[in-house]
Amino acid sequence: MKLAIFMPQFSGGGAEKIMIMFANYLVDLQGCSVTIVVANDRGPYKSLVDSRIRIHALNHNKVFFAVFDLYRFLRQENFEFVYSTLMKANLISIVACLFLPTKAIIREANTLKEARRKAVKLSVKFSLFLSQYLYKYAFKCIAISNHVQKDLVEFTNCNLKDIEVIYNPIFIVDNIEHPQLNLREFNVCFVSRLTVQKNITTICEVIEYFLKNNLEVHFHFFGDGDEKEKLLLLKQNYNTPLITLHGFNVSYYSYMKHMNLFVHIPHWEGLGNSVLEAYNSGIPMILSDISSGYSELISKEASNVHFVKPVHDVQKIILLISSYMNNSSTAQQNRPKLNMSKEDIFASYLNLTAN
Image (cartoon, rainbow, N blue to C red; front, side, top):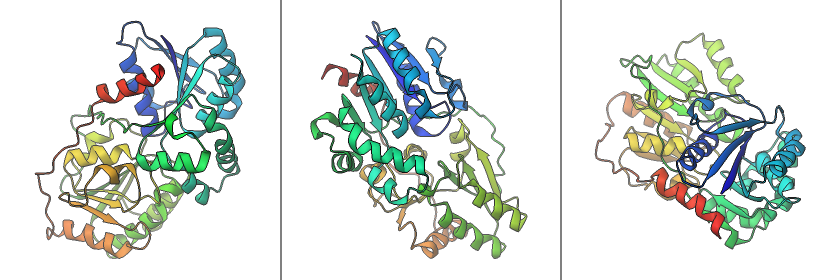
């Protein structure tokens, strides 16, 4: 079987990492040929790609501009299936395959209805508009949670029978033996794209409280995005070393497992790979109380897991951080781990080609 995996580039977040891990899984299967196709050949996740996998770059900085080159490459190579992830890449995979025998299997990690409510950029609004009409032409769709599946049916009119709910596997990259981290400090960790979706404005409110009151809490951010400027401005205004922007770091888990607290309070979420990794690490967590994949998998009764309203519970978030900082709340070590192996999950991805 000849398969392609298409995504914008080798940077970003959990979506890209999952698809690279899927490609690495495929390369070990007999009778399976896989090529990773990217709009542009950039990003730190490229280091995770198995050396046996062919990479084909279309050399476009904008994903939409790659549609004709993707069509030509898929036609030239006679791929049976192309898997894609992220909305813009999904759209052009579908368009390219409309005129080919190649079947498009798309993976959606976001709730598009919520994304439309918050969309500001014209390109995002246009993509969301197209998804309402084009997603139904995909051969199959992977929804990473029940909530995403429901959203796809309502927002895009995809046929329910063509949408398979497959949670992400937990795949940890932990290859830094001695991360640069002062363990004498109280360290709080954020791992996500720095976007409006991830509620950076509320996070800044929380951080500013601790800075104003000269409380020694060190906030670490792993990720990048449009909202980074808000954090940089806060760091500059307070001239503080207590905000560290690590950028995209493939080995964020090497830092995260040593943190005192993990915080993830998005307005909406498909699943959240880093949330599952943090949960299995055992560190205390503050999470948005929203419909999401992680809320389907993590019990509200789990030890050291605290659910909050993402906007209205600023004081509660501050009190929770303070309680761990002052040892009035203590980390428990008895949290049962989630068992989500990449072998089982990627076998489910591949099984979609047989339906």
